Length: 76
Image (cartoon, rainbow, N blue to C red):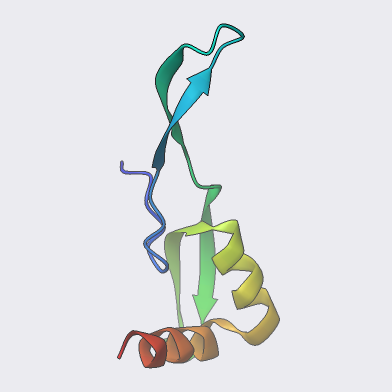
């Protein structure tokens, strides 16, 4: 299963570990993802999504349906 947020498309970023001797080793910065079951009243069913915590906090603030409408509006 990939580590990508299904709504915001946040993905792992590439970077470096930097040692005391300044040797750089590759690493990844992973987004903070959680798997969440949510109820969609408009569809009258439960869905399971993998979300970043940023998206989850926005959904808790404005609601799932309104967040999806705003996300679609910002992508156009």
